[in-house]
Image (tube, rainbow, N blue to C red):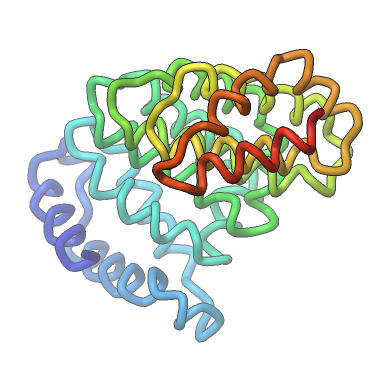
Length: 253
């Protein structure tokens, strides 16, 4: 609900410190930009003005109590190629990732944590975003590792989604260190996870990393993924869990 997010952002604008508030003109410009750029059918229709992107960057510096509408807008906005490039292909890329990871360290603010995970997942939608995510892989996986057993199932699904996107993006790259980091975290997830969607995404990520890779398949054996898959083969509901586990056993054995 983009309209609702923009309304909430406008309401919060009056509560943040005066030096961080948006002017009426900036709010109007951001509203127009978001309504346009968050809809995929508009991609390529016009170039966004750099000032439009600067306004959202300003919102992301708001205090933690007020930043979540900005993060939710960014979750959609980041899929636009120009927005993605603005945040990931410039000098601001490393600081941008650090900012998102800071929201993961305060898990008491569940909305901020969950939205930051979804932004990270959506960064993969553009080549420059993929490049930044691969460069920052070590820091990002360190940032999400403690969330793999969080009480909130949506946060756990968010972690599995990031790993799945990593697996797809790394498949054609000679980045075995990054692939190994992903497999190690996936082993932690599959050892304890019971939420079906999180399990399924973690399994697909594992299969993607191991497919046609002798080194990753050997690492999966070392990490005892076969034991996880033997257990998961018995899962009949949802059916896709058991079916996927059976296929993965064939890949790594």
